[in-house]
Every structure is written in C-alpha cells, then in structure tokens.
Image (tube, rainbow, N blue to C red; front, side, top):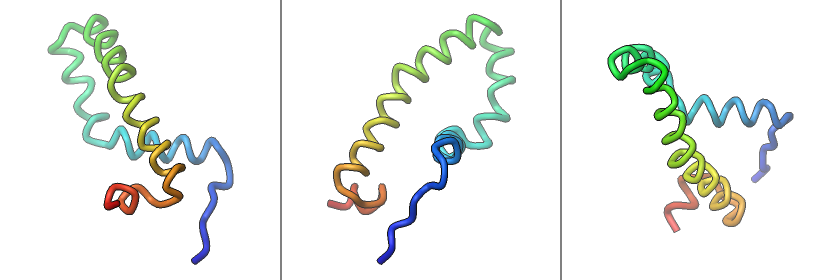
Length: 77
C-alpha cells in the first residue's frame, strides 16, 4: 500500500483548515457576530477557538503521526 504525501505545506494547511472550519460556520459567523456584539464577539470567538480548537487539532496531528495511520484508523485502536 502506497502512502500519499502532500506536495506542499501550504496545501496541507489549507486542507486542514477547510476541513476544520466547514462551510456552515463561514455562513453562520456574520449572523452570530451581529447578534453577539460585533468586535467583542469576534475577540471572544477567536480566543476560544485558539484555546480549544488549536490543542485539539494538534492532538489529532500527533495521534496520526505517532500511529502512522489515518485519523479513523488511529481512533479504532
């Protein structure tokens, strides 16, 4: 079985960000920011995204690298 590699780091980062964010969140964000108070909502949103989302993303990367498997296969073990 051949392992596929990313051709560039930018492609990997964009693919990871696209799968983590999703289209629904992009459509819903302006509405939520308007209801939540604009700039204050944005700062709190970014803060919690970095506080919660970044460690989870890094944990998934570490699990994948340490098991040398895809995410679904790594969680099955």
